[in-house]
Image (cartoon, rainbow, N blue to C red; front, side):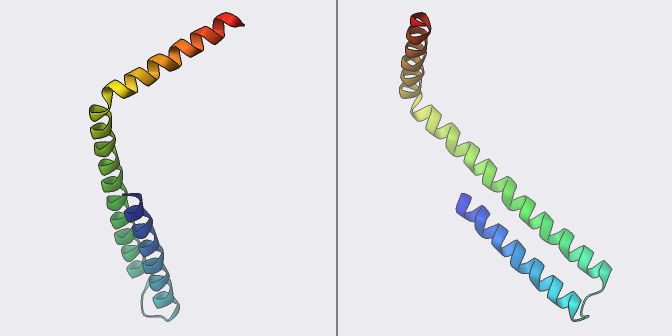
Length: 88
């Protein structure tokens, strides 16, 4: 998940460097550079959205599978907070 986003970001920067180098060599015009950068940003945005969508789905599965453990932990934490609040 996050590895995919990190790799997508590295690929984005590598491709951006290639576009810059091509522009410096005079192989691309400014409108071509703008179009290519827009495409690269769109690709990275799609990778980001997919990563966060996968992360959200994973979190939902974990919460649904561990509902009782999470509820118990929250209850113990709340009781400990209330106990400490009454001591002060």
